[in-house]
Image (cartoon, rainbow, N blue to C red; front, side):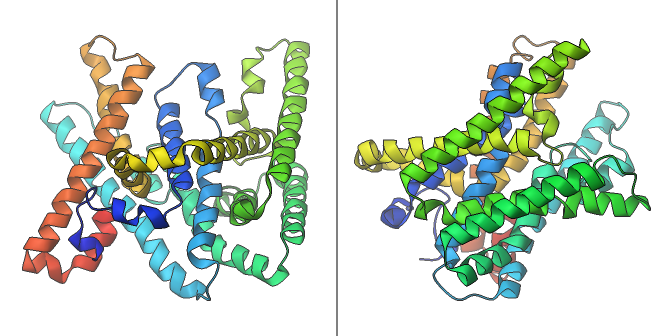
Length: 384
């Protein structure tokens, strides 16, 4: 049965025996943590969940290896398939987003809030409406993943591969902190390309590499990695805390790992790796103990797999509903500013809209001969 013959949720549990549900759980966790970050939670909660993007990147490396690692593949063929599946839905959504809000502000006779720079920046995955940074990351790692996997296959050793990744990251920290961080590069497009595209290939590429070998690493090694990452994070945290005290500045300005995310450096990544690997170990342990019971709950697993496999469109629709929710502040409705209410409402509407979209697209492809002719394009745009 092809994808065009399935409903967006129903009839998927027949394939659960071949899925590693652990990674569906982790993808859903990462997605919800990202949405939570955008609902302006308290600082402690914001910090606690600040491993979401690295977790998603790491899991993308794992899934890439599980689907392609044991067979020969063409990097060019993979990129021709992967890049349009990532870029086309985002551009489609952005076209809808800017058009819908143009019409909305036209009706309410309010100035349109998005400049040409904001619109063009969004389509180029830099700046813009402020939520497309992650798309740039996944586009970069989509391009880098085949070459990282080929390096792993060439070395044929997890130890050597992780060693190369560690050396690469150390070189990245040196280059960024001593050659790029405080240097004004010109012309401006060179600075943008290096700082926002080229340089972040290394840290996020290392996370992809870690994901590629994740299932091959034993529990003792992963626990050691958790301890080492936390020790690194804690050491830097203490240093920054006392530095803030010495400078007479609020500690919150320095100790949040978010401050060290663009581009990611050791303080941000040490916490993220600690939390992401710990989450993987916890999910793995829970699945070993209660996995059989979970798999018996077919509706729950169907929903879990749907959200996992629909994470791109769920993320895009959360941008739309979050913007709508933020506009409601002007009508002074109760609980609008409550981050928990905002999180659950935006998450629900994003996933519900994604479900309705996929159900409608599937129905049109099945029942309309014209849509059937363009089923491949419609699958890329609406069903991935």
